[in-house]
Amino acid sequence: MSEQIPSSEITPESVFRSQSGGRASRRRFLATAGVLGAGALATSAARGFMGAEAAQAASLATVPSSYTVADQQTPFAKATHFNNFYEFGTDKDEPARNAHTLQTRPWTVQITGLVKQPKTLDIDAILKLRPIESRVYRHRCVEAWSMVIPWDGYSLSELIKSVDPLPSAKYVQFLSLVDKKQMPELPGGYDWPYSEGLRMDEALNPLTLLCVGCYGEALPNQNGAPVRVVIPWKYGFKSAKSIVKINFTDKQPRTLWNEIAPSEYGFYSNVNPTVDHPRWSQAHERRIDASAFPRTIPTLMFNGYGGQVAGMYAGMNLKKYF
Amino acid sequence: MPTRLVPWLKIFAHLACLAPLAWLLEQYRDGALAADADPVNTITHFTGNWTLWILLGGLAITPIRRLSPKLGWLIRLRRMIGLYAFFYATLHLATYVFLFSGYDLPGAIAGIKAGHPGVVVEQWKAVWPTMLDDAEKRRFIQVGLFAWAILLLLAATSPKAALRALGGKTWQRIHRLVYVAAIAGVVHYLWLVKTGVRTPWKDGAALGVLLLARIVWWARKRMTKPPAPKARPPASRTQAVRG
Image 1 (cartoon, rainbow over the protein chains, first blue to last red):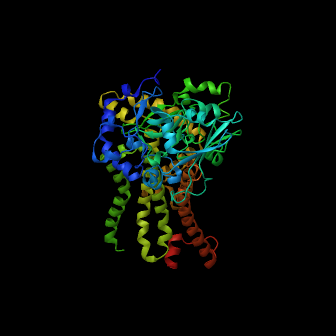
Image 2 (spheres, chains in turn red, brown):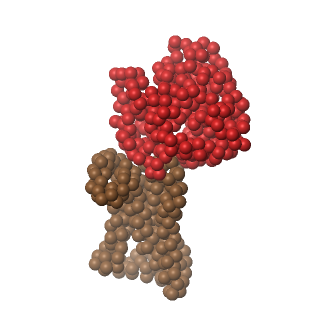
Image 3 (cartoon, rainbow over the protein chains, first blue to last red):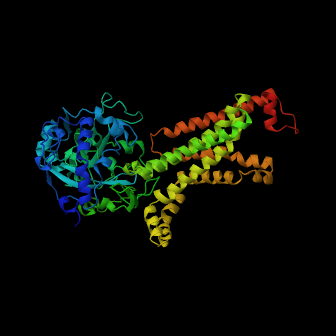
């Protein structure tokens, strides 16, 4: 199965080289973006970059993961300069320009709702809870473009198990940071904070990633630093960024895009080529990779993760629960 | 403006209208477009935006000209600007057909160079159903195509020969469809953005102001000069008298 191939074996050399070549500028970029000073993040000597800027690099020590696809990876520059993170502006290039104002330390994540003992977790404790895995996932945006990104993190289920939810907890809600001071571009007309959610079994699926980095480094601010979730079989907007609260509930939580346009963005929002968005077909996607013009490729059911997730939706009408 | 300056003015207007396209081609040439994560989306929005802006620019000529008799020369640019609006609208449509639809344009070009022109048709066959589906299902596509069809009609009837063949009155009636095209263009934009995106309202507001200026002009004309039944002088002469 393609998802079981370790990334080290499949990354084309040209892609690998272009990534290494871009490293110095990337570090400068990270420095500007203000994600440095992440004390607890281990610097990985194995990465072999010893420039002046490397001393304070926010590299992550990662272990390979079998949850990795063989598709050609999206270059770092594209994955970090083409973002939907409306809190920092509604244009795709705005988060990269504006998110430097986000303060990622100190950072805590509140665990609330139907858990044995609600508590507040420090980001550094979250980083140390489990080994950080590097997983190359397909990322399909509801807007019909897609990327292939090496995310770093571990299964959300590990965190959920450690906080002991009550049997009555049926859903998990993720709430993102909202702070006008750190987000001067925060647009009006949205019911902030950003809220997303999953059914409990979806949250416990090993593919659901609690993500703290990408491309072997701490998450750039515009990608949802310092901690987000990544749910690769759902449209990108389900994967909440810059999470400050994880709430366990017995009712389906409110989700921001669903509130804005219920006919366009369902609670489930599983990648599904047979269910159109009202304004465009979801049968194809523009794959953003190293090529100059994105190729249009067919979209796969559950973004190609059917083997791991289809069972959760057995017997469900996915046209109704889109 | 002295008549001898008019050719220079036209050259300037040509350059101004071609500048956005030149900028886009330069972005392609120097690789900036390739570094763009979603260049197809960028080109689509770029050509669409400039279609609307040039169309609004063309519609601004008449109200501005009416502000002062000294601005009468502006009218000489109106047809050219209208034709450029059609030009960018066609680029916009071509972007949709040959890039946005999933048509593998680089592949088709490579095919032609390699002596396999059949690739062009094969590509077309592959993307045609998606476009048909779009045209059937999506109202923003329908209204956009409608606006383009109007601009095509206006461009086709823009030569002086067409004016003579149709007769001034019919010609003018047909060319008033430009208002419908502009409204359809703004509606096309409004219907395609997601909830909360407000940029189409800016174009809509500009169009509103330009249409309102015409209504105010027309209402004032009626109030100051009750229309004599039948024998009305042509509009242009009335303006000259009023000027």
